[in-house]
Length: 109
Image (cartoon, rainbow, N blue to C red; front, side, top):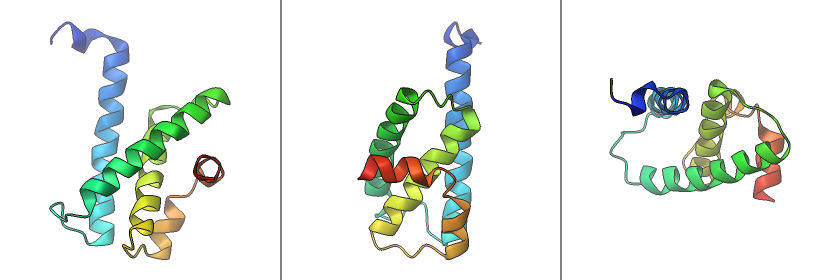
C-alpha cells in the first residue's frame, strides 16, 4: 500500500467513490441505460456540480453525513439531472432516491 493509501481520509474518499460507482452501475441497470449513452457525461457533470452545492450546504448546516449518505446524495443528484434531461425515471426509482429531497430543493432554488 502506498503512503496515501494509509491515510484514513484517503481511505474514506476511496470508499465513497466505490459506493458512487456501485450505485451508478445499479442505477443504469434500473433505467436500462448503456454506460456508453452520450447523455450520461453531461448528466454526471451536472450531478457533480449539484452534489458539490449540496455538500457545502450540508456542511454549513452541520449535517455530518457518513460515507453512505454522500453516495446517496450523489445518486439523488444524478437522478434529478437525468430527469431534467428528459430521461424517463420510473416512479419507484425516483422514490428510492429522494431521502435528501429538501436539501436538494434548497440548492436548486
